[in-house]
Amino acid sequence: MKQPTTVFVTGSTGFIGTKLVNELVRKGHTVHALTRGTSNKEGLSHERIKLVTGDITDRASLKRGMAGCSQVYHLAAYAKNWARDKQVFFDQNVDGMVNVFEAAKESDIERVVFTSTIVTFGPTPPGVTGNEDMPRITGRYYTEYEESKAVAEQKALMYASRGFPVVIVNPTRVYGPGKLTEGNSVSLMIDMYDRGKVPVLLNGGVNIGNYVHVDDLVRGHILAMEKGMIGERYILGGENSSLKHLFTLVNEISGKRHFQTNLPPKIAYLYAGFERRKAEWLGMYPQITPGWVETFLQDWVYSCGKAERQLGYTITPFKEGIRMTYEWLMEQRRKKK
View 1: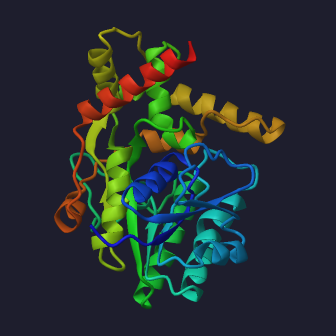
View 2: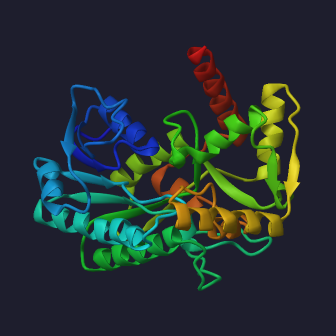
């Protein structure tokens, strides 16, 4: 184990961030956790967690938070379905990252781990398993989130080429016990499916994605800090699975058969278009947008072999991860009764 140090974490109040902060504390580190005044700070109460009020758009608050730190984990991002002003994605995900990097340069930070996303690599062709070296097969971006994170990642690589000590991690679809926010949408979907509220399989549920258990992802971040090579990207994922298979696992684990219905792509696009117009006209946050429908109609089949070889990264078997998540969800329901 590395010597305990003082670490700065952005995005500390999110699903992944809260888990990461607590794992760092468990390993003996002291954490300066960047939080907005309005953020849900549940789970950030240890004596070695110092809450720093600020924002990634405010470089002065970043410098305050980094005082006395030697490492930075930059997780904060605008990762939502929609924003009334699309520029928000770029202000937060690109300019916000630049602010973190510039503050780190001025604060003599030894190393930064930047959390990107699997979608920057683009979808995978039929029968192909992608990795960090696979060129993107389309110049199109399906969502503003995807485009802004791709721009940010290229800037991060440019910083690394100039000697800035950044390691990039690319999580896949994360799930597991923890805050049931939009960032934990897979666990929310499992919960709603089990309650009979979301029995919908887009395109029959045949499209494949890669799913990572949140505990694996947190360990992967720490391994990237300890062992990652500067300027390298590491896919932090798990097993590849179709949505149909995921729901089949929930059926097996729960011992229940759940009603399922197919949602044809055309109907999904119509509904997503209606949701987007409702958001634009009335300001009501959409359940989904056409860009995200298109995203989920692609395959995102990826390997995290590089992280396994270079970092010692390990994967929780998918069925076991879903079981852990389902049992945790049942526990939460019992607590609410």
